[in-house]
Image (cartoon, rainbow, N blue to C red; front, side, top):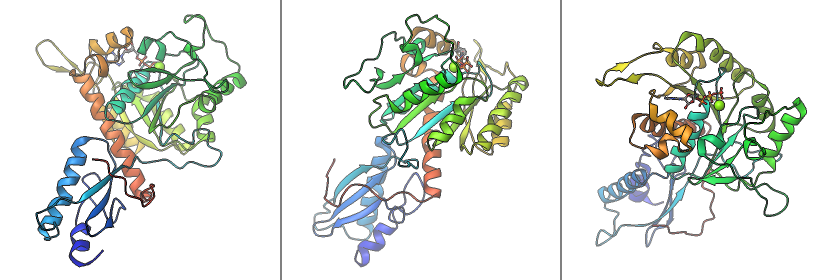
Length: 363
Ligand SMILES: Nc1ncnc2c1ncn2[C@@H]1O[C@H](COP(=O)(O)OP(=O)(O)OP(=O)(O)O)[C@@H](O)[C@H]1O
Ligand SMILES: [Mg+2]
């Protein structure tokens, strides 16, 4: 880059990372005359794109680099979704991020958080799958109102079911009777999980969210051995009795080297008919777990009838009642999760832009 152009572009700050986009490898000059740029976006949100475009054009304008008629440069936009480390034996090579939703505790809302987080990520424009990793008590069929049985197009891989644009897989899809007890011996459990990872045609995904069973169990251990997990979303409720088990969940993550992206305090409060916020289950549980986990408190989700009703009706609240306080809290959670994933990536240096040098103009 020459002189003024170089200096002008070096001063463009990425709105997500608050650092120079050139330094981050998110801004490159493809050609100078005419001016063609390549710009990486770390979020599919249209507001982010608009803001970046404004910053680039403002910088060029200030430096008198906009050409004669103030012509705006050609920009080739690329979505740069952060990606976990993927080793050669990874069972999910096309899945950029694997997020575990867990807790040490049962009934705190793991499945509710996993399904609504998945939907909120999908609504932000990402490609998302949800894997029900609770083999004994699968929830995904009920939460999404799906009974169907997956089929296989190639005779080798199971095709996930789809709902609201999400790819879904659950052991509940494979059972003849949804109410049947599933009795697994250890090796069968691992076999089923391995199949869900390796034999399901997930295709390319930006995020695969896993809804884990309660307890400090086996599943997380198996996962940690099989692949590099992007991070854990730890779910708790505010009250003291729940916390004891959640501390154990956090300790297990530390032992297994599973990074904790942050904590969700579910059933955090209830807004009564007079509009007053009632903290039925007490206060501060989420913050305490977050401090212990050395991770941020990502969201506080209110108790709302719509959440339970949506879950029972096969229409998670983010889909069915998007204006409700709980749905908005889940959307904010998705934003915070993405920000945390991005931040973790940038600490280790963002990967370079992947596409070849050839200009690909997407406007
Ligand atoms: N914020 C909320 N407001 C109202 N109801 C909620 C909320 N979160 C969860 N619930 C309800 O609480 C119940 C338990 O939630 P969920 O099944 O998600 O918990 P879980 O942690 O996955 O349970 P398990 O340990 O059995 O897997 C469900 O009926 C769900 O609809
Ligand atoms: Mg569950």
